[in-house]
Length: 394
Image (cartoon, rainbow, N blue to C red; front, side, top):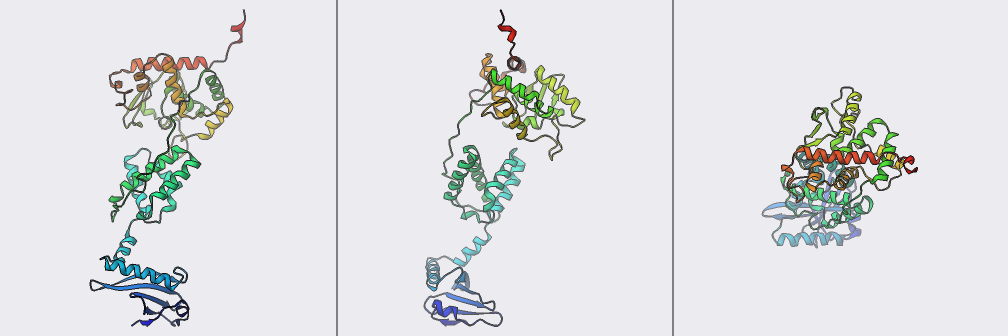
C-alpha cells in the first residue's frame, strides 16, 4: 500500500530511499497523483486511477529533472482527472501514442513504395536523408504544419525555391500514404496549406557566340564528358536518359534511339542526326563491350551527373548561368529559329502528349522531326566554327 503524504518540494526530496526496489507515496491533496522512489535515488511522479474497473497508470516525469515542482505535477494530474471526467482514458491514449508509427517508419514505407512506382525515388531518398531524417524518431502526429512551413522556408533560403518545393511535395505525398501503415495514421497532413514558392521558368539557351565558346571548351575536355555533353546538345534528350543510354536501345542503321521510359512515363523515339551518329560510332569503339554508351566504374555501370566536368567546361567557355538542361532548350530554340513548328519541336524533345503544344504529336512521323533536328544541329555546328578573318578582306 502506498502511504499518503501532503506533497511539498522539500518533503519529497527528503523521502527515504529504499535499499532495493521502490517505494510509492500518494499526494493527500490531489486525487491520483503519486511519486515513486527507487533504490537508485530517482523520484518519479505518476498518476493512477481506476477507469471502468481497471487500474490505469501514466508516468508524469522524474522530479525535479523533468517536473520541477509539486505544483507542476498537480496541474498535470488535475488535467488528467478532467479528461477522465470527460470520458477519456489518458493511459490508453498515451499507450496508443507510443504505438504510433514514427516519421522514420513512414519514410521506410514511402521509399519502398517509391522504388516500385517512381523513377525519381533516389531523389526522394536524398531529400529525406538531407532534410527530414532529423525527425525520424518523432511520432507522425507530432509534426505540425508550422514546422513544415518553417522547414520549407529554410530550405528555400539556402537551397532555392525549386528544392524547397520538391521537399514540400515529398512531405505531402508521404503523409498521404500514412493511412497504410500499421497502425494506420489518419491525422491531418502537415504539408496541407503550406504555400509553394513561385518558380521562375527558365528561358536560357546558347546563342551563336556562346556556342562557339562552348564547342571550343568541349574540345579540351576528356573524351567521355565531351561526347556526353555533345549528346545532350545534339539530341535534346534529358540528362538522366543520356546517362543511362544503352546500346540495346540504339539502332545506328535506322538512326533511331529508343528511350524506354521518359519523364512522361512513355517510350520515346529520338532521331539520330549525322553528327550524333559520328559520336556514337566513336563511343562504340571506346565502350569495350559495355552495355552502356557512357560506361563508368560506379554502382550503376554508367556515368552519373558529371557536375565537376560541367563546371570545368562552363568556366573554360566563360559562360554564366548555364545548366546542362539548358542544352536541351538550346536545341529547341534553334529549331524554332529555323522555322520548325511547336508540335515538331515538342515531339523531338519528347514532351508529354496532351498539352496544347503536344496534342498533335501522335500524327507526326519521325521524318519531319529528323529534318528539323538536322537543320538545327547543322546550324549550331556551323555557328560553332571559328570566325574566318579572311571573309573581311576585300
